[in-house]
Length: 463
Image (cartoon, rainbow, N blue to C red):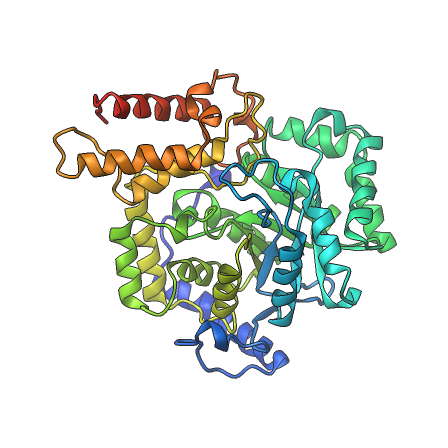
């Protein structure tokens, strides 16, 4: 590990409580803005979700009062009636209903991209939000020029202009360079944004008022992150989007990323607080411990409290496909009850225990899709993780629950992933791997899962 990415080995309870104290002051001031009291939301049922107690944070450069819960428009509901939803049409009526509920309960930050939902997210987001006054919401989108055929200045500007059309707006509140650090790292960043003059173009667009806040989302090569922060005096980043959760805090770069932003006073927008849902579906033996501490709270709420407890966090994004997820997250932040030092340490210990289960770090972002050979890559990996978490991974034919676990794995696999989209169709072309923000060797994992499935079918299992 080099000096640039060297993490602090341990954060003491005293330092965390000091940080939390700042968060508490900030939250208290913000709750005053919204008329919130200090009562906890413990025990509030879904029918009692408050409409006026959302926690807000302030963007320093523009003074925006942003809801701590941000709506990620990556995993929108669709009209598919089966498990095969790869090309399903977005359910616009349901999107509208979810957006209506979110706005009515204080959510005002909506994050989308030209790349989300097979290119349909911006349009669906624009339809839903255009029914409200423009000052009722903040919309964030990205210049998602991943493909080399969009790296030219003309193609990138065309993508940027199309975002205004799809979102039905004449200015964008939060514009991001998308997924900096992925692929070929610095070389790819320069090709997408520097050599074609697009970064300079976006800076000028901010000066002209068509962009109100300019930032970037980061995945991958830490050298690119450090380089962009080294140019902060020149580009004056208004915010930066990073992956942060209680597993990545010590087991990946989250602590380093957050602290580098905090040093410079740059607000952090948080993505993957649940690691694509994995932190709401943790191994049963571990989930019990959290449920014993807070029986009336969801397991997911712990992850959202973790992300929201840091004072430099502007908003925490969640891709909420279902109303119950939206309601639960609103409860967590209406208002936020920051973690205590003891709870912080509990979650770090929980992270260590989860890591022992060796799940595949797939966040269901679908950046690996579409597969040219038709595989449903996320569905395959997520089914494997689910069975691992639930104890349905037989390791020996002599295991007491072997037959039950074998049936659960194989039947669930066929239900979740159509046969023509299963792992045995992977030829190892490798087109998916460079697009994975979690740097998973996807072909290797698919082949490993396929070998496991075949061994299960033949009752010759060994892991």
